[in-house]
Length: 284
Ligand code: SF4
Image (cartoon, rainbow, N blue to C red):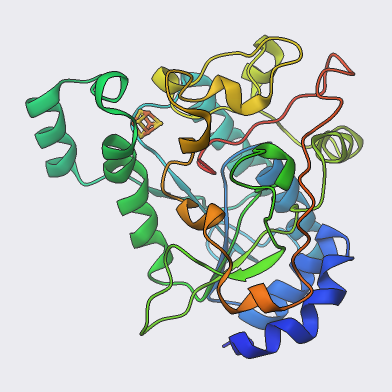
């Protein structure tokens, strides 16, 4: 069992200034084995790489650390291949969570396969992402995401490195969420990926930056923010899928600690290099 939430502020200032690898070390020390990395994009694979360097690869039967992901049923073929590539590269049994078939069948029967273009993405995301994530988190005390502040000027600019999960904690059960890359920029993530030969989704080389489900993701133009390629038919301020719905609502008790910096930060040099792209899928 990890730290009580009240102790977060003691660590907040220190963690805030630490390298993501050091934040991971802290996280695994405090919360193993009831902690897992959410595999959802380029940043989270960088975290998997750091975790493998910290803890060793382990084996499929006895993994050194846990990784889970969400299969919405609507991902690109390239993303499925990428998930398997990461599995093979690090020798880890990625725990894949699928939506409840009855819920998907009911939605499709009543509204068709593309209701999100008419009704907004929240109903479909609730079925295909949020409910499976809730099941994935049920066995954990803490989870690790690849979220960064510079991913969304409207919803992630206040993201702390550690917080009480504002979406999935309940009165009976406190869940900790760690965002070791919160203070890193897209450039830093990609520098790490290239320097450490970390695998990434080949869709990045075709102009995709933020990659989610196939019908809800498109490439962006130079100069556009990465979130412009997600749910482009909707209002900019509604572009969270429910996995991190609390991003704009405060940070539980961690809010009172020095963990929070309120400086908005948008990736300034997104297209400064041709190969400088970012992927995050199930990060929402
Ligand atoms: Fe459905 Fe699109 Fe959300 Fe995927 S991103 S779960 S297809 S609305």
